[in-house]
Length: 278
Image (cartoon, rainbow, N blue to C red; front, top):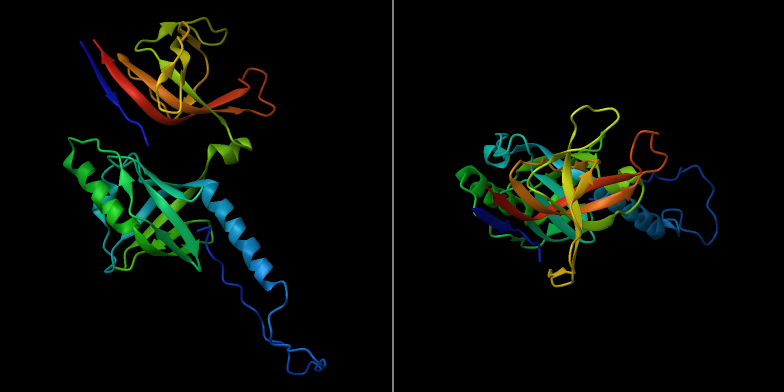
């Protein structure tokens, strides 16, 4: 018997620059207003905003703590203790993961305020009621205008209009760690691993994988080749025996890998399709 499920997804913080007042003892310069901002102030502010955008997009933001206006912990946001709610900012869009459904919406940042548009989500039902409630708890707090702060150690704090305070820790993205964008590829992973030769690991079991192609409409193209031993690791993916998966992954080139290591790194982007085979 085979069951199949598919899932397809159709602050920088504005820093306040403190300017010191000019000395009252300084001689006046004819024709010049010493209290006026320097001619390059607007350009400097623009550069700061751009740097902050790079900081936002260069990290995954993992929820560390969440309290309401009275300082009480918001337990509903921690339904998955082993997988905290995580935010990713890419090209003007905010993506939320480790909820029941994948969620996302557009965002803008101006004057220290992060504005998030109403979010869309996939429609997968979770049997755990706490996970179902997590989606609502996240969505209701992330939509709208959020005041932002950047901590001394890089933590991102979001404050809602209702007084909730959400604190996120940064984790560098794969693009940051590997120094550039990766290549998006689709990999099918067979339900069962197989023994494979390895000079350092006795009785090693390898994933059986093959690349597959999709067109712009998500339709598989061509005939995939045979499954082959996969000696690398797909970061973020844990294989379950008996489950076949189609994965969307980012493949990166590794600069100066150790002699016994691969020159490629694979990072899971999402599970596109899953089928349990019995």
